[in-house]
Image 1 (cartoon, helix red, strand yellow):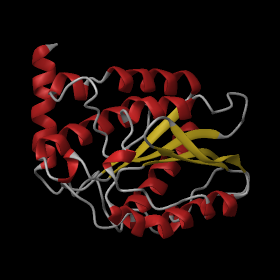
Image 2 (cartoon, rainbow, N blue to C red):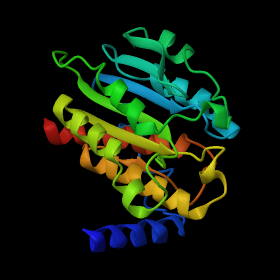
Image 3 (cartoon, helix red, strand yellow):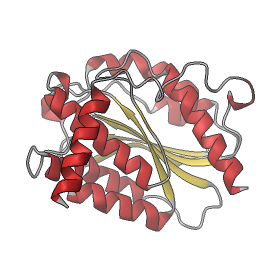
Image 4 (cartoon, rainbow, N blue to C red):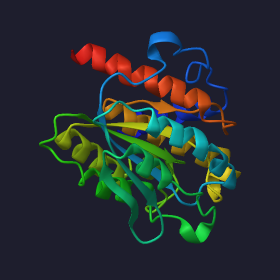
Length: 239
């Protein structure tokens, strides 16, 4: 186990040191992949202590919500200090869901205990009886230091495992966009690599994907291009 943890830590450190071009390709999902094909139940979750630049991406995030197929249901929530703040319960009114987005507080006082506790809360709001596919879009730095700042406690976070198990139980695929917080991931490369590694693990083990490029981000445009492509590819495999 120790050797596996060290190997994983080495992998994510190397990953963060590159620009990860395979993760983001602005031309990847043109043509038939420009829109999501099948209705979704989608929870959009935004970590509230992310850097203020994330606020510039509200427009493209709202556009993505509005572009979902008819019959989709969307929830909007923020991972903030205390507990999950749900600004919009699941609704088929996509315009209303898009308007529920707000600029993150970008303050350490708004940092969640750790992101995965509140992801777990959000997962419990999915209705197992609904016919739509279930998915989460998590915008987060992925870093859980609630039990220590090392490879074992961050890449193998107890609450991350709980979120994975709950997502599997409810058949929810988790997709993640990495963005730095105003805390450790704004300046500490080890923290960045741990956070990205944890997001990658969360997405991979729930059938989703994590999207990031190097240690920072410029725009979510390419992330959304690739998210649409990933959602459509999964629909094609299922059908």
